[in-house]
Image 1 (cartoon, helix red, strand yellow):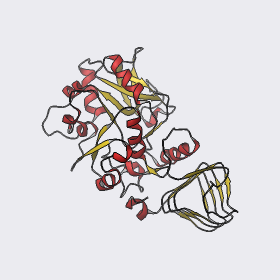
Image 2: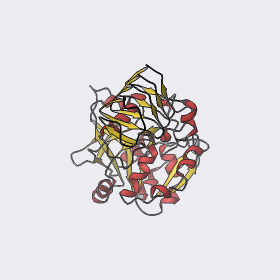
Image 3: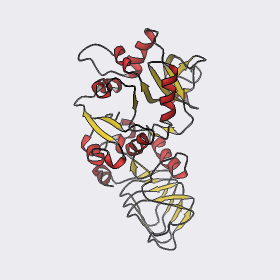
Length: 330
């Protein structure tokens, strides 16, 4: 699912689809596409809407990432479930996986698939326990993991569960029998339309609780934290965009000897750091970004082409160059 507008990440997503926002100097969707074949998913289709050419141009047919990738363009947004129904023929008669192309995770998809095969339900939803239920949709289950209901961003005092819906689903093809039957309905959503239909029909579907990393990078603080977590190694990613230094400038980078590095810092390709700059990790320096002489940068994200002036300070924040970001050339 890669068609959304990513409004909560504005201004980053005014001219950039959310799946293209950089996480450790690579589009967040790239991390998902690299994850899929490592668990045996070798074919994928992505629905596109917002600046679709940036996604197509970046990933093309997916071959460089080890996956066969095709696309479905939506002139009008069809909703989370509507976009899936629009490509139902693609899945054939086999169970299939649906996941957001703009979340950061190292979920064990092999375990999710095995859970779906074992429970015999029509759907299996990946869920994770969260401390702040007021930020997510939560899933109510019985002692056997069968889904009994949902709550959308409940008040903590009224929450009946702390299991967050990660929007990572294993489906059997029979799930399409419970989609709205109107030929041209309004946008169709899993949470508002399909899952309530399963509950109303007493159709068994289940959760699969994960303990691996998951962050929907849906807000600017979550997005920043996701980048910092990735640098710190809290999530296992197959490839970072740049050279990682831990307490020192990585070998091979032509930077002034006077640059101070404390903690883990990711240096993007072509970045520049002035003499006397102090860098405190976790920190991501984007491709082509520049940090001036004597500047101090701590626990921050410099997007591609971003700059911090001589003597400047950036702490726990995000800096960027709008034109460079929107170009997708990084």
